[in-house]
Image (cartoon, rainbow, N blue to C red):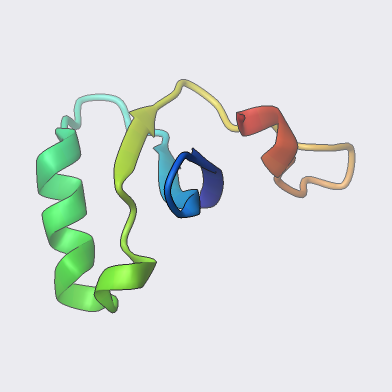
Length: 67
């Protein structure tokens, strides 16, 4: 998860997901699932599905590339 710019709050929690082949999930169900596990302010407001996540040579996630 990372933050995207938001007009009112400054940033909003956003999630990027890579689904396994043969699996499907929509944005609403993923957000609803996170609400059962996390406090409301920690839950993503948007979910984007991507094929791969950007990583550096050490395998760490490049959060700035997600924006």
